Length: 447
Image (cartoon, rainbow, N blue to C red):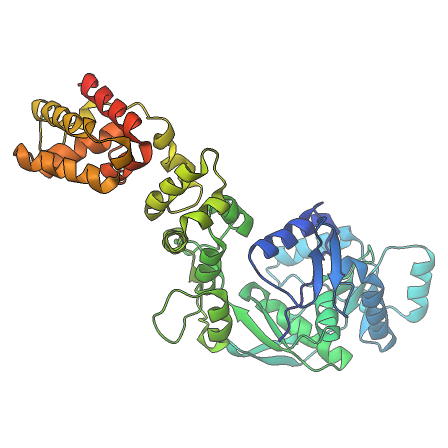
């Protein structure tokens, strides 16, 4: 099949400068490739590829207006000159009477001469669809099964607004037909609009595409996912240090499940495995903790070199590579690296009391640090490796009747300033002999 990218920018009141470029940039970052549509060239200018352009709906106004006029000529649509004030008053009255808010079809009764007279006066107008009365719209949704809606519940929808721009309904139906879209797959919030779209297909005498309405994404409290309760934009998560692979993998599993209990999928596997038959109807819970699990998994699968290229930290490359190789097991996001790696460059201030292991005491801790220092002082730079350091720490435990906690705990805190960190021997191997001995001496003096 083909993946066609179309920019639906017919709502000029919501137009944001640079939004299209940002969208294309994000889709490119997500490694999504489309067959047709706009793209950014090497100079970050928007270009188009494909035979169905233009792909910006705002550049296709003439097409929509021609199709709307065709419906008018066939008496399937009509001009509506009702003012915004009249429509607001009508809506308010209907609400007071607890009636369904709908247009009262006032202008549907206008004669051709009345339309011409109002047009001559320059009155603003919209074009509305003539929804047939007393019938039923029936369609099969690939996820929800058969759906039936009576036309008495469907408004005479606006097709062309007073500014000459089409509504979403007309633009999408026309574009989907002209671009030969076979499957309309979207969120369930569009389910109530589908009968309107089907009526348009029928008015144009076009074949219907297949419809599939995906479940909504929900917060843990089952409210609809929204910016008020956290990030919802892909760009937000990319900026926070989430990997493309993790985002694609996790989002694909929201509301869909594979044939087995497998959770890890790359994009190629997902394309092969995905089937609308296994999409659930109920809303899908967006769980940030589960996303974190996926992200930490994919971070662990990458080499230190790959992570360095993604994070681009300051400082000596070789040292950063060693830190990444050690710290990637503890990372949930890429952005955490700068925070977790800080102590390798600058020892944070800490309370000396945390040097004392919970099952130890001050005297034992001082004695332990003294023994550690004496053991490490004889190790030369060329032998300053993690396994050598660990052997000395272990020997300190065995020869002095210490517990592992008596030795490894204060050593860890002394060189990192933290209670949670990688093993002390791994940290010291990265810090080097001079810096490690300096930090151990400082910790002893603090006690």
